[in-house]
Image (tube, rainbow, N blue to C red; front, side, top):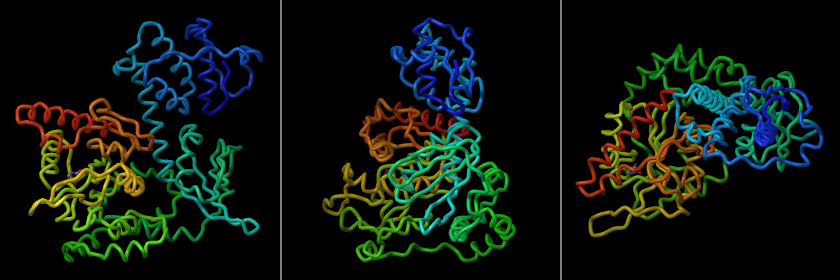
Length: 465
Ligand code: URA
């Protein structure tokens, strides 16, 4: 079978369908890349073979692995398809099977490559005959340009941009995405006015007390540095880290500034925030859901956190203290995390909705579930927040978080476990800790055990990413 070079998911799908229909076993097929010839000749497409009845999850795995640069990828995928259709329906569940294991490692490599491209690609501004265009150069490890481009359409819909790579280019003209021939690094302007902005952003998010050069290099490998203006600031920041840490300790903690939400929202305009700090400033100034809420409760955790946990909304304690997960549900979560070996201080904790919604009953403020409309209002911020934090794994705690992360009302009971949020990070769905608090006593112990078991899986998944 001859498929197009790079990633050819449609070609592979058609080829696999036809091979299965003809009863051709994997060891009789040889896969070639690069040509346009087709074993079945020109009339083959006149009689497309029927779709394959494959279990859930196989299609997603195939789509993820097809862009891998391993020349054996199509042979491996066809072997998987063949074995599943010939008596091994549950093959994907056997993670110790060498084929499944290898494909899973390939899938992870693609997820990492996508994450790096989304996080480390930098556009530079160019102008041609008065027309503004943003151009970026990137060298992915795998053939992921097609899979990565929709993310940038979503993010930079109102701009006109091109992404150039050594094996192809993607172009957005404000209405349509198209793909073209390879580009060259020299076609990207050397520098522009945004460079200083990126450096400022990096300097403002750089935490000198957490300088760990090995972790920095593994998170932001040196091969990407030459495209990223902010990396010019790294050597100086690292040199100054010790002195800045001492100054921070001497200065002591600073109290959050309270703002008048109504005035601040009016002042916000339609600015796209360029950093987590800028985003948080907008959230801090936004209107609460109900009058009387004290403050917006922002996400919390170290830069570079590998796992982010998304809850529903701050509760009474969180609203008073201005920090997520400090009340009873948060304490239960902290206990379960510790039992599962997750260091809470290394995780990023945030909420789908940033304000406490409640109803006053006497002196008590009773939690009220946010509506779908309210969740979608905050979703805009949550998406950007997670982009800035760039964790490798995001955990949805409960149905509101699932709604915020997927836009869909999916019952946690059946979606519990690893999940695909169609984002550059891996996903996991589990229950909200306040659900455990509400259970009758006799059911609590078992449910808590299940929750800790989920957190252990989360720990292991995060360690493998
Ligand atoms: N419940 C949440 O979802 N978030 C918090 O911060 C506290 C309780």
